[in-house]
Length: 453
Image 1 (cartoon, rainbow, N blue to C red):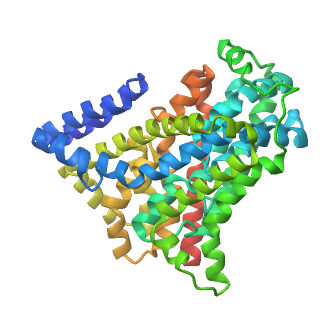
Image 2 (image 1 turned 60 degrees about the vertical axis):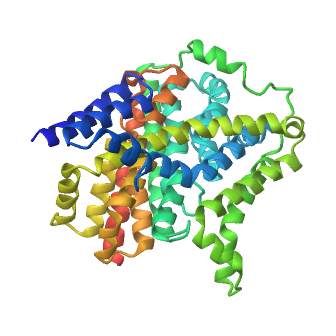
Image 3 (image 1 turned 60 degrees about the horizontal axis):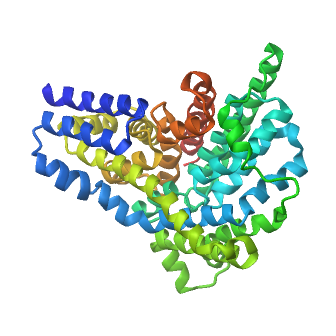
């Protein structure tokens, strides 16, 4: 009884501390102490074994994925320093017009994140440009924040095949699949997320106009507007700006193309067996192409690279901390009872995957953290039940991208803080496009798979 109560108290404590803005690493350390003590786990095992070095340990995860985070941070920062990221945004604005501001925000964020640019870099790229878009189109700031969340944190993160996102790589590494596993289910679910999400935002924008709700600037807007590209500032063309992203994706897809064409190459086996290294290599190739193409980044490449490393470290530490939290949780009897209950549910196995991955991601408020814990603790049992690794890869990815965006999510808090918004002002719309609609899309993918398999 005390053990189960301690587990619940520890989970609630983590959520409450995160919502109050406490550093996630501190919140995790306090929470795992409560859970460990309540479950009679020796303190030395909590902090020197299960949390840092267990199968779901913080340092175990950080060591395995450090290179990918660093290369992602490097590519994102170099895209920003070279003005290529801004070039994508400006180019799409010129073609679609500022009145389509919500669609522009979603498309630009989706293109950048699908190509491997770190989510936080995308937020900082789109917000300064977005001030002008919001002002011109008279869009409430809460809806623009939701459009950024839709483009940067949903279908390109978990659904679309081939992306070098950490979620895609975690599943590939754990299941010995490639980054395109379950691709058609991902494309289907991604289309559902994009279409339903944009429909919802446009509908809310129409309702806002009818209510007389307008764009209202705040101090954050004035600060960030100064960082937006000036009208006289030279920007790379849209296609030139997109070229590094295409090269990253092309490098990732090359082994699959060679395999489909019947060509045998040692690179194919390497790419399939080492998804972390291959995705990292693709991001490095994209960074080097930026160095070659764009003069601004050549002048400050070393500085930009250093900032890229800084961009990578905080997300890596935060994600690792959440996974270390899971490393302690899975040592408890309560978790094993919970896992046994999930596996014994009288529902189709794929539906059980949907439920379990969602719940774990919801508790940790992290799709990557929840997915890593799911893969290390529950995935083997699902594989033994007969689910194909490629299908488990994609369905688990989709499910992990549902409840991960609850109010205590680090990405949600970062976006709201960046734009000077509160949960009360903006979270409802973010919830719809990053929780409700992704769960609907994942559920539809599960139903489709149950019909076809």
